[in-house]
Length: 408
Image (cartoon, rainbow, N blue to C red; front, side, top):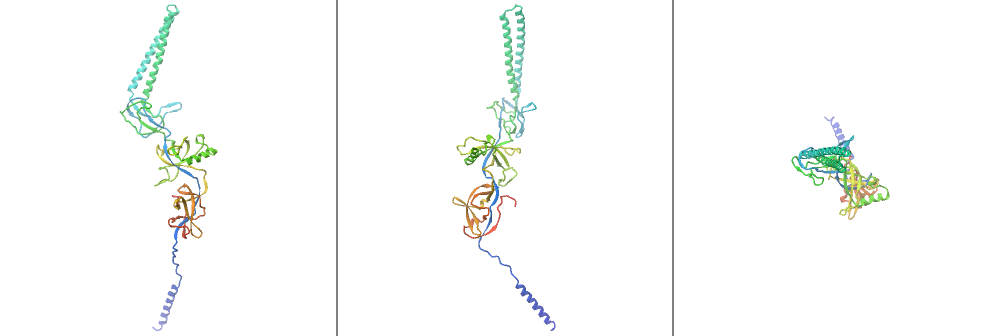
């Protein structure tokens, strides 16, 4: 027992030494709270930007026709499917096509009128034949000296009267044929139909201006979009026209206009995100609207997918000048307003807040164009500007500025 006591004591001393050594090791530094306001900073996004002016437009069909019958009667049949595409008159290989049939009006009365007119024409043909025969016989008699010149002239006059009567009889035949043909109401243009305003059995009144409206056809491709442009934009383009830098639309000048609408490929819950449709301005009014001070312009757009329909409102834009290289862009959330000026808060090398007055331009893909007041190297506060004060030190955290919705 006594021999084992020194060994136990040695082991106990060794264990104590190990515990003491472990306790003397380095401890991690505690996190120190500086007490400074934490903000997120980033340099402006640099990109090539084209400045646009935003517009609101309304879609219109280049051709819109209210279909009316040319003859009166009751509707015997509706020959089209409501809302379908129909074809207007055209000629193919020299053969005319009259257009898609839309309605059929009872033809009985008009067929009877044609029969009557043809019958009258045949009567006059017979009378002409008789008059010509009488004239021939009178000519033989006159040549033999059996009859007088006056009698012969009378027969000649009878022939001319009969010929004139036959010529006059051709008019009612033409009119009757035309009226009979008009009992089938056809599409005057190619486009999409509206619903049938009247159905089978209803009586319609014929007439080119006062006739009963049966349906409406709107052309579908291309389509017009009308915009109202403010006077500043008008002045900008007028200056380009006067300087010869751009021709007016009616002189062949090409001014691009872009639109976006729900239903295009790129959109989110707030609406379309991209201007995916591009057209050209082909018309501008010759006077400002006295009520709004705006000028009406018109763009032409392809519409193969038929998403542009009359009276639909769209968002549009036209460019104001050439693209800007190395433009500076920041989010609207980084901009503060002080009375009548706009400010951006930057963080200097000493991490103190500096207020920078800026002149801002329009939005480009969701970011605000900075026209003056910043450099590409400025570290601006993009989150946490609500509590900062110029001259105060802050604790900056690095961030980035990207277009809204851009994938990281």
